[in-house]
Image (cartoon, rainbow over all chains, first blue to last red; front, side):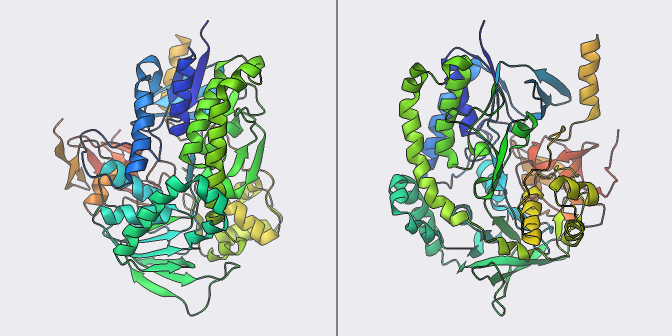
Length: 467
Length: 90
């Protein structure tokens, strides 16, 4: 009997896992929300949307190579595009919705490769149309061939704001300012790690050159403190902050723009893996709550594996290695996972992963957020956008003893709206730590539905099962 | 399907290209406010990849469809939801 593997997510980890599991003779089902494989980093435009590519050629080559490897096996897998997993259960069931139908999968093993989402530090005015996540703005360019703004301010930390600024410029956009919490030269403190990532670093330097040659106003140590506008964004106030994350008085600058693209790092999409009952840990620097995994991506729940950025932010190259390793481990009986045969077969990939991981040490240095930076969130700032919950209400709930994220949610409704806390959960965790001096020990319990699904779609499945 | 066609947003004709998302076509046409929330706040596309649900619109009479996750089709009718009015035609 062929072993059945279900993979959630068609980014680098999911695609590599599928290729490996097929190679090992497994029956693979891959479920992904996107219309085409690639995930976020290797997001593909529709074939009819020909147009310029603004990413570095070396990145495009990596993307083409992995997607070609996946396309070579796609006819041998059950590939579900535009399908959403809305629940996973400890008994190994995966519940998915596709169009107006739902379905239950019961694989022998599942690989959860759900990646990351972007993180924001809320600030007054950030709900105005025109304030976007930087990666979301980039996705419009990459897959839609649309400029998300004519005159943009890009802000945040880490490498993504620079990349997005450069790509928007190459596409003909104007960048009014690039504000970075700290210089990417912070990476120079990890020279050994930089050597491991010298190929990636070269691409970064070319993006930097694009921005420099365009004469973009670059403000290091500045963050957006207020978005200004009526029906939509018209300007942003940027200000310098000190090492503790406090605004330095008198440094505020107002810059007109129609797009403010922000990125303060990433949060793991770990809700599904948590729903299986897997043991979790918290590491805000690499994505917040993460499943505890071993070398082979095994979680504490037998048959449940995690791979890629969703298991801890480490970039696309690590994710691809992860996919291969986890794809192999999920394809063999559990008794063989730690065995000498598999170890020998995976030795080269494990070593390559370690080299890519080394470079991530340098990247992480650029993503560190001082806790004080969360003071940008004033009492009046909307934290939970879905339910319009302002920080003042959350602060009062915390002060009156509702310390866990679940208790805050039940009292002020933060995290109970359409996105299920995807946009604000990490912010509430950090704000709770700043307000109480204690980091929350448990994540807001993720429950079905991981995504809103129409009742009719579930009713149809129940009706079909009864007949 | 023709590669270039029109959709409508609030009754206005919007140019779109096959393979684009509804959100991309609207943003390209300069439409920033895609929804007005229950408190009266204008809302636009935010995450661009489907997790925040801020860009949900009424599409062909079905409310609460993510504009960033839905590909355009010729003649698609997109409406701006206002508060709990989902512009449903069902």
